[in-house]
Length: 167
Image (cartoon, rainbow, N blue to C red):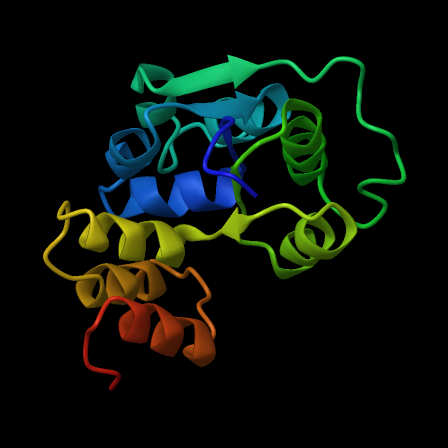
């Protein structure tokens, strides 16, 4: 997929990046990101008092985007509303990238819709390659310490792609 078109963001990557103080990387890397209404509500209203709830509305790069008409129910038969809206929006607008962490949602986005997918660890790697971070390892550890599940293979891949030692 060409490096054109918007970036669409789902809740997971935004929340965990906010939790480790790195939400601004999305704007720094991509200029702006479309945030479907269901994702915005999940982070701000439903997530009041949690990471991202105050940071997302203040982020000038986050473009709150209604998904209209609503997504086809078959898109997200076993996905959450935010993931369904994010995938639908990405398909409809010809997104160059969708930020998703949920394993099933990533599979649907890639296999069913041919979308390019990046999760929070991938955002950290891209930020390091762009010179915005000195390393990704400490942030991956912070994510884990805050209860965010990262499979060992995901951590190893991120460290390897960032040119850091795999522990």
